Image (tube, rainbow, N blue to C red; front, top):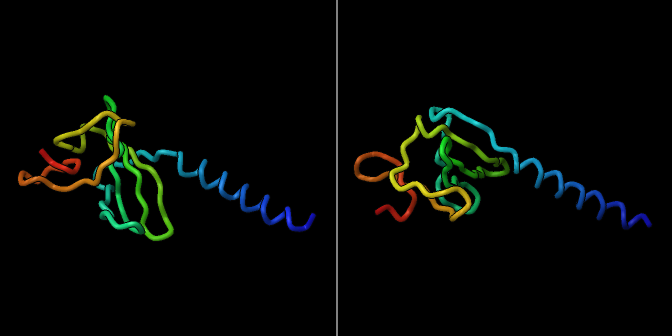
Amino acid sequence: MNRLIPVAIIIGGLAFVGCATAHVQQIRYSEFHDYGDTPLSHTIYLGSDSSFHYFAWEHGKSGGNWKVAKAEMIISNEFASGTREAVLVKNPEGNWCAYPCQ
């Protein structure tokens, strides 16, 4: 019986983490940070809808989801949210683009 308690705590903790990461925080472009593309530090572009660009990020033990108003941030080759994921890079004009840039 005592062995079931740690398992329940772990499962409950994972469920909490899953719910916490589903929250999308709206930020201004001035707060946006590109954490790169390594496994422990990255910012991933998740796509856009008619109003926002969506991102998932991790930096060490921190992470979350952001949305930035499209009026504040240009992504030259945006795609619909939920269709794919991409790392962002800057094109020669200095605008963000989803890798691979075209």
